[in-house]
Length: 545
Image 1 (cartoon, rainbow, N blue to C red):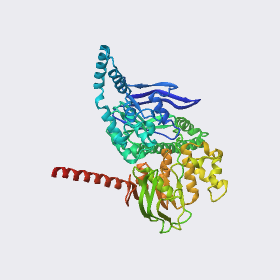
Image 2: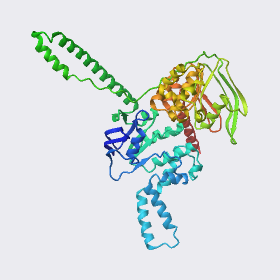
Image 3: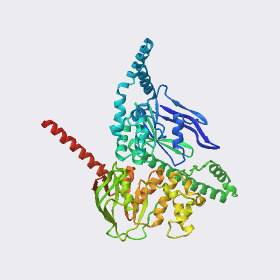
Image 4: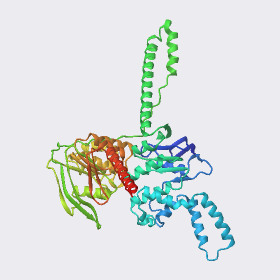
């Protein structure tokens, strides 16, 4: 159990949290939600002891071990992968290293023997003999192949480092598990594995995530940060959303009835206060009026952008034809003889672990790379807007936000441009901010503004939900559902893919294309069925032998 007791945390004079009292108990998974800047990551740091409270305290059941998903991807660059994971249980790792040092001594003394015996006993109690196997199992589940298990961390790419740090947090069955955005940079199969792991985890989990499907699947409770308070709801994200909306609606309806009653009493008092025969009734109504208090319905800190892609031109029947496209990058063939044709109603989600191949394909289709073999052709009625995976170069300049977007606008009018910025939560004063100093989420909203102002009828989006908060993801999701054009996109948000795509294309590890006219859930189900069939056939062959 971990609890916050009267916790207040101030940044300068502003209280981010005030008098927070909340208890997280064993066997439950708590989704910590709130708008960007509400303090989700800060609260996790307070719970972990990395930040001191301004007042109040954090209480943890004595003897319980707390594990945190590290955010510094370079912290363990000098360690090998397996050691990094096992060191997630620091005491166990220290015992292993002390044992190794003792046994390596050339002059092994009686005192060394006694100490080694003590360490062996504690090591056995902590299931130390299974440590390497458990660490390897976590790495395998998250998609880190065995050949990387003894690699030095600095030699791994960013996505693999994220998975190793996640395995480190999960290692050794911690009593309390704090996870800040654990699905970031994970492929869909790794997210699916993590979901099952957390569902079966029997201790306390507190998780921050922008993935609605993930929160719905793993969370038993939702802790909502808003108005500087944390309110606990029993149930997952969807239950919280419905409950919170119902509470607001009930308060508004109650206030409406109170306002009607106030008006009725005021009219009576005004009409009869000077009437001697009804003065007692008027006085009585004055007392009743004084007792009526309207509920204070504070505006939420959550803000939803307005994402609306409107094509300037209706798309024709010929959209995109790709024929025998191949591309080799750094000696690896990432695309191998890819062919497909798009129709005017296609909304295609590209999935699979080969994310590099998807990015390369999108860059070829947008004219940023040339294929080694094959060709592609966009239809004459099409126009394209692109959301790149790596967009930092787009903002490496001294333009203000308004100047930057005006450069891409067909209408060179500041009022027109600011209308699009306003929809994406950039008020008038934000228009003079330099694009070079924007946060990740702000840059994404700028890029979405650019796509909207383009009037394109074909949208190509490479992981557009990274750095967005839940409200912006929801708005983008709804905007793409309503869009009357063609979409090619890749995204790690399950609900986003399921509700948007009507066609799934998987690029395999060897660069081959699997094309299915289906929803994402149906695609996943067919994959599960195929795997079961393979296992069944293998078992039959074993029986025959």
